[in-house]
Image 1 (cartoon, rainbow, N blue to C red):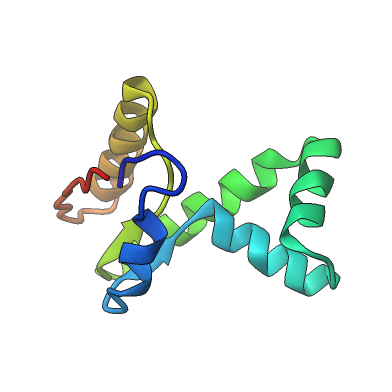
Image 2 (image 1 turned 120 degrees about the horizontal axis):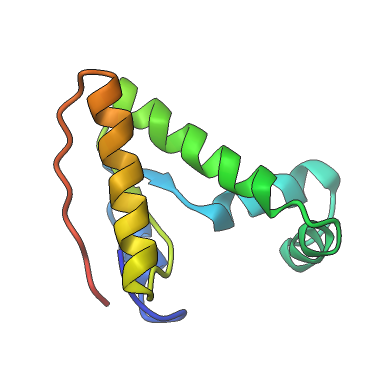
Length: 110
């Protein structure tokens, strides 16, 4: 999905429970819960410790898991920059091709 913060991406996701959600925000929420801290504190922790690679790795692990198990999923991220969207699409295609999977992509713009 593509859209600025607050445009309704997560609201749409929350009303379409048939999809598995792949979101860096949900990974941060899980981290915050496991550490007993708020989302903001977890975000600051990740930022201060320069651990965004951890969040990105978990994000792609979840996407990979969905592709390999033929599950429908939605990516809930901002994706405002075209080059970032292209890079993500290419990564998804690579995961699918390397594993003999068929991938259909649809974009929701908010």
